[in-house]
Length: 360
Image (cartoon, rainbow, N blue to C red; front, side, top):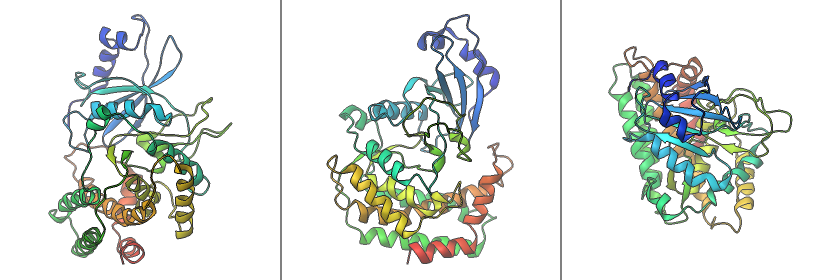
């Protein structure tokens, strides 16, 4: 993991180049406060001494996409998304900041609480329709990864992640067998599905409840949420937003919708698993919100295919992470809530539930 130190952060924030880029007075003292620590990023909050606006400093430690310049990739995606009004506006990025892992980015702070599946599904549908209807320019499109075969790309990722588990001495034979059978079924589903040639847009691919910032009048504190996406309460915002654009693609909207609705997503930071009725109601709301903005033909069918494929992605990631969490030499931060969910996801009961309800 690239070197990161708190002293290096303080030194960088006092550098002339950084201060000029953000119009910070040379004499102004900055006091970064840690917002959240994830496996791949550290987020800090500072207040601009002139404008009074709160800003997020995001330090990248590991690229989930195996990119040589993760922070610039995320910065360019946020620049392209800015016209939607539904994502943070990026202000600055430096991939070569010394002592700061893989570089640093600064973007506007947005207040809000995590999404609640029991009451926020219509608002989430409107938010995603706004993002998916955005038509970026060719330059932005060219800077984003865009798998020709979206489902095949996810399954390839699944095979790679599952390999970490299968090759570990910690692997349990019954869990290995179950995951291999499930992945084989997913590959069969992909072969039977028609090739995708429809509408593409910028997609997030990581639609966990904590990556949504829902803004309620008089209540922005929320409960729970993704540690990496956590933001402190604030007042004044009027729109819901989507943050943590670490793995954006130029792909099909159904991939986002399938990830959003999959039980491996909804159950990750909550105790919610959506019913078939709730899933259908969300898709109807999304289709209404997107109507006339882009072609939604076939999107429901593709979403229902992406739900089990996303389950496979979540389970194989969990298998890989389960092994990594027990490696005391990795130096990666550990989270007890994450460990608890990893154990649930790899339990015979949970695997059986996913197999019976989504893969058969």
